[in-house]
Length: 224
Image (cartoon, one colour):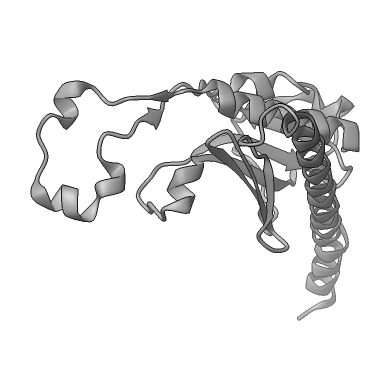
């Protein structure tokens, strides 16, 4: 390998690889903040609800370094930290903004996904039940973040240049994710759709018969 190639490789490692490593460290730290805020919120909600109705339980569930759950009111939010650093399609709204145009290194993101499932889907191991991505948190090497997903979450922090990861912001994010899940009611299937079943459905899928699905999430597409 000639000196020019070595120098090019060195510059790439120093710049792009360094930026991605810093981004990854920020995502790990941000996930820890979100996890801590979720635990605190669960404790506070249980303290408020328990004296009123002991049957309502809000639960934090640890699933390892890259995942945790918050279970409440028949719903469960699954928080997943992705280990890969990504960039977005050139047509994505974020990529065409002044913030990223001013510094190309700002376009690399770690991401945290939040999925909403029915709690019974997890409890009864109903593997074919759908879950819904209600939010994706994108975090870059400057520790700035952007949220895309359901409408309430989309409009929480619309300006990435002004959004630096903090505990109060992540607390507000979790609260709104829970509100979005609770407000998206379970809708029963149409009567004709469940009027006729096969015996094998009754035998093998007893927990699935006649249950509803969540269909109320309104997502904002960020790409054009």
